[in-house]
Amino acid sequence: MKLGVNIDHVATLRQARRGTQPDVILAAKEAEAGGADSITVHLREDRRHIQDTDLPALKRSCRIPINLELALVPEIIRIALALKPEKVCIVPERRLEVTTEGGLNVIAKEKALKKTIPLFKALHIEVSLFIDPSPEQILKASLVGADAIEIHTGAYSLAKGKHRRLELDKIRQGSALAVRLGMKVHAGHGLDYDNVQPICGISEIEELNIGHSIVSHAVFWGLRKSVEEMKGLINLKSK
Ligand code: PXP
Image (cartoon, rainbow, N blue to C red; front, side, top):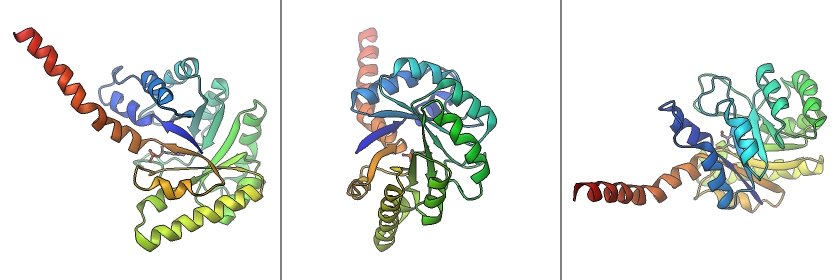
């Protein structure tokens, strides 16, 4: 199972100061050094984290594939087609949401998807659709020509006890259905160090896209050393 590392939250921290730190290119390189199989970024319409200029810089610097998440918005589609990342993942987007809160409604967006997906496929860009594990949505994803689905694991990650097992079953059944329909299966959203392993037991899933938990974890793996380094500099100068 492959791991795509979503570095949006590194950009979120950078945008808090509208500066250059932390550097998303360095984040991508560190993720790659850690074994990431791809780098995922979401160019949102409101540009709250990843900026337009990050995209060509990432494309130039990464040796692993770029997976660009995008909403069905003409301006963003144009940018994605010009960038030519290896993969795109079409997601729903609402301006006031904190994060991508639910899967794309493929049934409601059928017409737009039938128009958009061939544009990417003509450039040999793999297209996945970020959807909930509902059989109707999965069936429609196959009918509109998606290469892959990315199953939204948000409900699974929030559920507890038997509800979590039920959500896991939905993901398992949805994955099997997608493979029967000839699509690849990815999954992501809310996956962390505690809940990822049951998902890894679903053999149909080829790729996980994980961001928030990895970036959060990285803060604590690096915080002590960073303070020590700063303390070292201060002590050196004040001796
Ligand atoms: N996959 C998709 C399509 C997403 O929109 C997101 C969130 O940006 C993720 C995966 C990663 O979710 P998280 O940051 O919760 O790991």
